[in-house]
Length: 382
Ligand SMILES: [Zn+2]
Image (tube, rainbow, N blue to C red; front, side, top):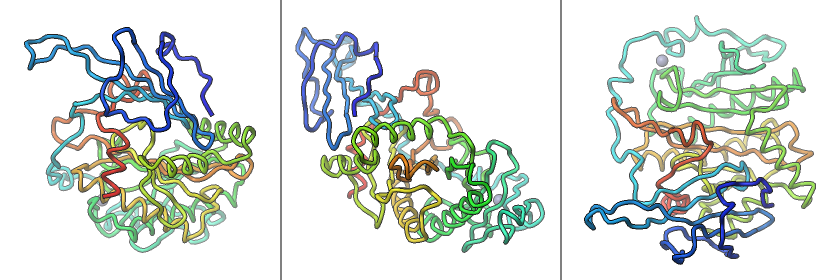
């Protein structure tokens, strides 16, 4: 499915080629007359769009003479955003930051063992009979911030203040996700109209987290989040056109193309997205159609194993902060929807860190990335 959205950027494209696999590191292939070379191809009904052009910059090693450096722009086939790949740049941290000053900072923490029993409240008994949901060392309690109709906070570990990414194994992550999914099921049983569910995470302040004690948050709303709504619309259109599920077709396409396919973990597949919106972005996609509340314990455990695997990879890359979004849809059965979990690395919490959200991302919905998804997939495959 190729997007029909008009794009001024490509209005002057004068080249068009069909390609089966696009390799963006092969260097510039433009002739002197070409300004932009557009490559489009379709696999399993998924349309891939890439444009190659150049950045004209002075070369310090050549006395400041202007050189042409390859510049590649891709469009995400699912969410529609654009990504530009800046080759040869180092936008990501290479070294881990000492977290000691952050994790030992004094301050009130409602999730620590001496507070959590007193400053968090149980869910109403008609929604969650047990009040607070505990699975292993995790606990799920109501969120006091009213950002969604129904929401919960899930704390990875209620017995200690800080959980390093190194400690996030499949058991810890699995207990937390199981508790959050059980809460989602309870909400949707109580109020089936709150059909737009997601489970999401900010880890450490660069990701937007206001509380350091590692936790996740959920939303269950009558209206979808914006990209959740876009995803459902795309799923519905794809289902109407092909009779197939959009994300199932994407996984099939990426499995076929191989370069961004990492592997299968039980009922889920791990891929890296064609046009990442964030650094080292990875997608974990269920191969079974359904919503978050349709996941059984074994499917949740598959997500947890895959997520723990990706976080382990982030640790190996000295990355220390991330967001993830596990997105479902109450329309899953009608639109052939699958649960998808997207995770991106964020800047490390160094005292003077560079935010990874520039005017490109914040104001133009365009991501600037220095590592290709093919490189990330290759790293994760080992
Ligand atoms: Zn704490």
